[in-house]
Image (cartoon, rainbow, N blue to C red; front, top):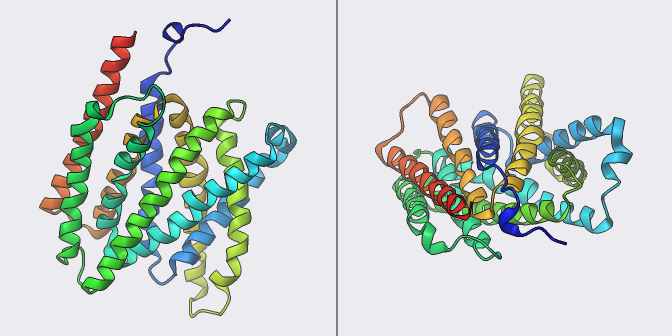
Length: 320
């Protein structure tokens, strides 16, 4: 006999939100990497990060490999392959290209549309919060992205690229937005279907699959020679390992936990913290304060998250 839905304990919102915020802080580091490695291509940065992710995942899973993969079916492996391509390799190539061509702030704030895109998809699920209750928070997110995109097209981000290049960079940023939206929704739905796979193991198994896919792209990424010195390569692989450990292994595990504890309409809002921390790291790297439009955009994004969270808390209170 099934227990009535109203009598089941609700997942703790605070734990899910905390996990989402920390995951965003770790993911924000990936926006800084293209600034640190401008002499390397986006494909090289993507492949190196995910080769390192796969290596770390295999080493961590090795002592308990059989137990970790026991719940996995062939369909699960195919799902992880699709999710790894969308949310890791393709996403990071598009992201790196966008940072190079449109600037880190513009790219991170376009990725700030993820709360809107994920929420729009999540609102189509059964029992999801009505979009009318989230209208003003989503409008604030759109306004924030529009403000910084306007500045980027005006040349405010940097003077290194002409208008067509900046437009191409913004197009890559929107491509990354679509890619990661598909990943986020698909990952949340896969985790809900496979409760016997822990959030940590889900992250590590994703790393194994992502590493295998990165191997296929290693030849076109690194063959052909380069003028990089040994010290450049050491810094390159060091940054790749840092991103693999913190952004991929730890960050993805925290994101999986957040995805399990929060409804999709609120999970989407947690992604904005990746944007906020990416901007913070970028401003620190450039040693400057945010420009007025950037500061206003950040305020709009954070206000949108607050409004969406408050709506979910109120809904939970009424249901309880």
